[in-house]
Structure formats: C-alpha cells, structure tokens
Amino acid sequence: MAYWSKKYQRKIYQIAYQFTLNVDEADDLAQEIFLKAYRSLPKFESSSTFYTWLYRIAYNSGIDYTRKYKRRSVHLFLDDFPNDESRLHPRMTDSTVTRLAEVDETMTHIKRAVAELPAQQKQVFILRHYQHLPLKEIAELLSIKTGTVKAHLFYAIRNLQQLLADYVQV
Image (cartoon, rainbow, N blue to C red; front, side, top):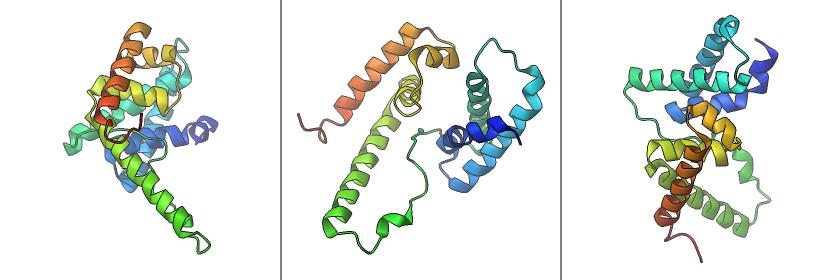
C-alpha cells in the first residue's frame, strides 16, 4: 500500500486485536483500517499528527466492529500476540520453563486487572504504558486535556495497585 502502512502496521494491528481478541479477525480489521485511511488521505489535515489521525480511524473502526459483532472491547497490549513456539526450544532448562510460566501467569493477572479498569482509565493507561505515547499526544487522541489524562493515569495506577495487591511484593 504505502510507506506509512508498514510504519504503523504493528500499532494498528494491536488496536485491531484490542477489539477482536482474535488473530485472524485482527488481521482483517487492520486491513480495513488501512483501506479506510488510504481512501481518506485527501481529507487528512495536518492540524494533528498523522498517527493521531490514523489512530482515530483505527479506534472508530474498532468501535464499529464491536457494535457489529456485539462484543465488548477489552484491552490492548504490545506483547499480546500469538504464542511464539520458539520458546519451546529443546535446550531450555526446567528452571527457564518454570520462569516463563510464572511470567505468563503474572501477565495474565495484569491483563485481567487492566481489563477491570474503567474505560477511560484503561485507554489512557494502555496508550501511556504500552504504546509509550506522551501525555500531550494521548490528550489529543482522546480529545481531553492533559490534566485529565494525568488524573486518569493516576487513578488507573492506584486501581491496578489495589487489584494486584495479592501479586505485588512490597
């Protein structure tokens, strides 16, 4: 398609996966998002960053997908992709396998806790800590003030600390 489709492929796939929670459906949705963006390129105004514009298309497409299939949006994680079988290499020791299982279990608890956050807190937390976006860009993406982003982030972290209290060693 275009240079920008390769540049943003992973991020758009992650957004699509957030809504579908299915690898094949996320691929299809990501393709639809890029087609919508490509068709809408003449409408792009440089008053915002290109990624902000593309993110908005992706997010709205995810909402449309959710409505269409009557599914609930859960969350988005950078490392929430299909399992990589290379971790099952024959040279792995039992302690490595045990450690990987512990990490997977911990990530499952974290994902569940993030999924329990109120929608706005969840979205801000994911954009900040998994997409690594600056607060100002998150504010622009969500059409809210930077102070509101900070407040949502503060409460998200506080709620996660409470939800994960049994798993965190102080």
